[in-house]
Amino acid sequence: MSEELILVINPGSTSTKVAVFGENKEIFKTNISHSAEKLKEYKSIVDQYIFRKDAIIKIMNENNVNFDSIKCIAARGGLLKPGPSGVYAVNEKMVSDLKNCKYGEHASNLGAIIAYDLSKDYNIPAFIADPVTVDEMDKLAKFTGLKGLERRSIFHALNQKYIARKFSKENNKKYEDLNLIVVHMGGGISIGVHKNGRVIDVNNALNGDGPYSPERAGTLPTLSLAGICFSNKYTKSEMLKNLAGKGGFVSHLGTNDAKEVENSALNGDSKAKLIIDGMIYQISKGIGEASTVLGGKVDAIIFTGGIAKSEFITSEIKSYVDYIAPIFVYPGENEMEALSENVFRVLKGEIKPSIYE
Image 1 (cartoon, rainbow, N blue to C red):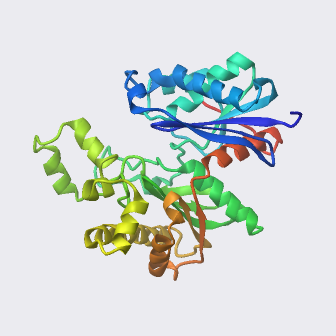
Image 2 (cartoon, rainbow, N blue to C red):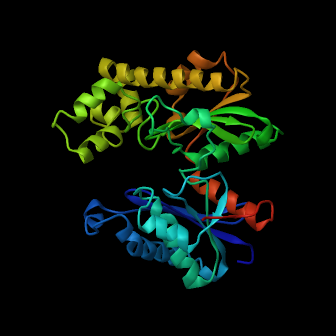
Image 3 (tube, rainbow, N blue to C red):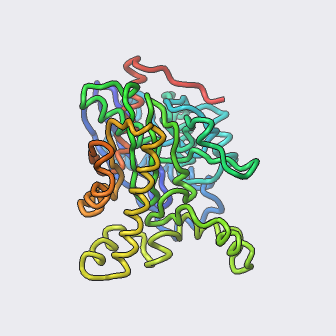
């Protein structure tokens, strides 16, 4: 293979997505599943990195792709020091922060750790792009009514930025010239206000702020939440899991499968219908709130993420918010393509990688 190839690595909680891309085509893409029994062998997520690295090397061999043909590695960024959007070269400081979970523990932390190991083994550069901690929020957006407690920018930055740029390009516009509201709907839901190329306001989707979702509890009544926290009914770790992991659909219906809930709702299950309608209502209200940040001057509202595949959910949200701006749907997560495209922009000299410090 003479063309420039990029290896893309995207670790999730129970699987590792791996792909190899040429500039204009996909060589292969696969999802390596890891059994719960196997993952239980490791004390922490970070301890899994050798096991997952070996699985990646094995899948490369199975697909007859030699590391000699790989120009560079693109890995999903984890919980890192908050900073601006961009492509970052993986370095020792980044890997140290991820291994020590300095800014939190998450499966995505493994991406840069594995990429760094492979980059040293095969003498090829490694990058991440738009980690979940991308922070471009305006100062006012971070304030709360409690001193010392700030809103945090933790969201689906990779897919939100990728889709916003893709939409801009398809409409012969510059991303930096547009005002967009991008709604990523998956296990968590993020509503990002994109103003002139920056996400100036967004909910902390990872930890459950904003609309409730298949796995997140969403923003909750403060006094009632404080009462539950001090009721001795739950430990701190159990309560955190209730907010992100066992919230939303899981709390109400015992499943995080949005398609299953939708099918039940459309087949006469009144409880499922009520819960899914509640999520739709909260997403719609969040979009309305986001539009005020832009003074009502919104060029487009964009739906993306796995739930955006649902015609029922997207059409119901449209019925609430289509008066604000034209609505466009880009279903799916697109993370692998986003990582590949970002790093190809580096290879072509369109952007320079940032240094993580």
